[in-house]
Length: 249
Image (cartoon, rainbow, N blue to C red; front, side, top):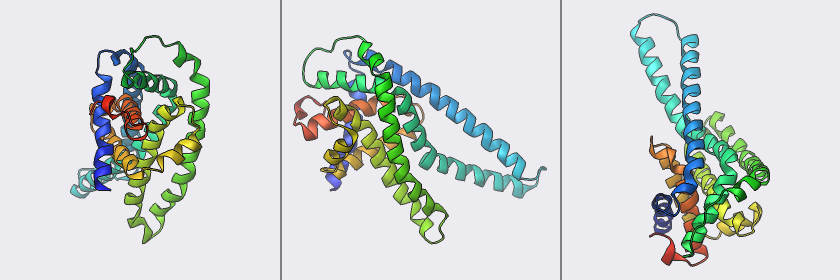
């Protein structure tokens, strides 16, 4: 079990190595641009709004306790952002970048199979509407599961379990999100993909935990989307399709 979690996490590192290879570098540019723009906008908006909220809630002046409360609330805000908002942001970013992520997964799969990767973004453009609709279906599935878990946060006694349950849920959801790209490229619908992924839950969880951790690291998180797509493609190829010799380990 522990070994599977570690193996799953290693595939994200393989993803970072893959996207930096000469034949694949040009295919992750658009997902990276989307990630940088959205991360920057998200951080700027969140920090600005929270600072305004603190100014409205807390009294003015230089009293020491006001500074202490403000500092503590900022700590709570940062932790909450990392645990909850980063997850929801990542799903939103994938909603926008879905066609390019699917295209990247296709090119990584070709690379792992040992054939030459050819250029062109025409297929990514053609998949914009279908990919967007598919991401909406996945998003509705994740929201349906997230809602009852979020309720735990406000139930006395049970709320102590919320951070642990949320982390496990978010990690698995992120793994399902990124693994869905190579599986869909192989002709699977999201429901069938979830069934296949349930065959090796610890591998999936390990990969998802690694993605979540990378999303919280400055600079590293700018590349996490394409790296996770590439790593998920390698994970699918290596652990389900038996193509480990080509997966970058």
